[in-house]
Image 1: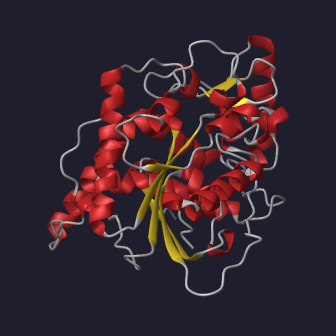
Image 2: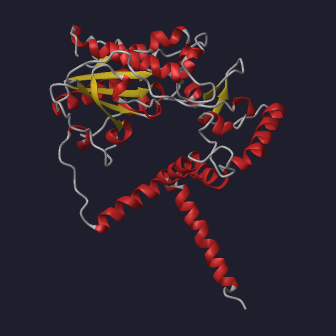
Image 3: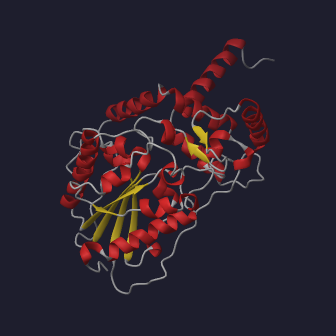
Amino acid sequence: MHFFTYKTWHRLVLLGAAGLYIAASTPSVVRNAVTIREGLSLSNPFSSTKYRFGDLYGLSFLPAFRLPYHIYPTHSPIKKSGPGHDLCILGDSYTLVAQLQPESFHGIDQVRLVPLDDVLKNTETELPEPTKPSASILVIETTERLVRDRFGVTRSTNSSVTGSPRPVTTTVAQRMGHLCSVFLDNLFSGTDISFGLETLLFDYTLFRPLKEAKAAFVYACFGRISERVLPAPDGHRLYLKETVTGTTTSSFSPIDSVQLSQVVLGLNHLHQCARQRGYSDVFLSIIPNPVSVIETSRPNYNHLIEQIEHHPGLSLKVISLYDQFRTRGHVYYHPSDTHWNQNGVNAWVSAMNQSFTSSSGQDAF
């Protein structure tokens, strides 16, 4: 007895394929799938290995770079009695992997992490109001790779930054329209679709030996690797390719005075909005691209971080890591990840503590 006709099976297959395509084009679905599978034991064949060993390993699957990646929360050795400041960090993935908490600082009662891109793009996330207007610190953290794209463009007044009332989506039709708009934006970005499909279908530990064997063979025989990854000349680490060869994301892409001024104006605008919001101190912290501080002998470095941090028109206070990281850059970054390692996080937390306590030449705590 046949429960389904051929036409029914055909429709079910098409429906399933459409559902998979929609899921793969939705970043939140892909992220949640990875997060759930990362919670499984490595011995589980259905666990995820995409980020356990570094995101660049997850792109290349070169077995030599299957190096465990984990960041542990830091704890300040100095404890402060009495009420402290509140800290809000507008940050990106560097902040997310840092595992920050109030105990990381000696004078902070509360730490809030807010996605920087969500605020800049005027999505559902707002620049939060300070809980202690006279004792609230805002840190704007951005990777060097994205600082030009984030701040070097002309933006209309952003209600999520300024804190002015945003239009409220009240009807189901409006909400569905917003969701459809987001979906269509993702639908036609082929790279994201490919990444999503690969993650949902093949990001399982049981496929890892096959992926590694294929990647090792192709690299050994043809010198080819994932198009988003670039091996270091000494072969000891991997870089995100766009930090070396990109247009606005590369450490070696020239920047002229006009572009630099646009970046500084964008940063100053966010600083002004934060002060109007009620923050007592606002800091900027640019995290260097690994290649900027490790491959110091490469020619044509654009010195973007130095030009921003020392620009006479910059109104923000600066938490700088560039000079410290450039002396021994390889110490602060994981060989198979775009992000820093435990040493890098510890150095950043230490620099923040020093900047907070010496703010405006005074003991902020």
